[in-house]
Length: 45
Figure 1 (cartoon, rainbow, N blue to C red):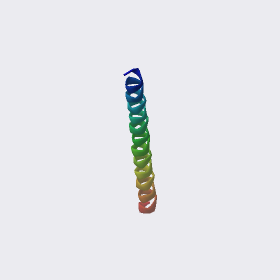
Figure 2 (tube, rainbow, N blue to C red):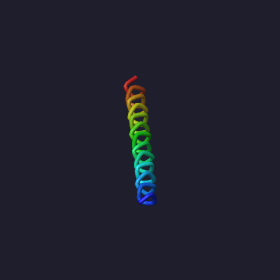
Figure 3 (cartoon, rainbow, N blue to C red):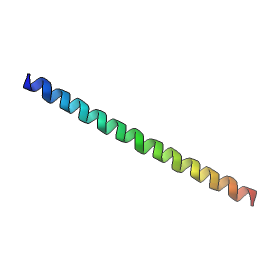
């Protein structure tokens, strides 16, 4: 039973790491779209 609980904890830890990765990935996409907006602004000028 203890091994089962330990496995569950590891799984939850991996899920937390995974969602953190997704959060940083979406953050990078937002940064990327900000750069695109700058690029469009530069072309308008």
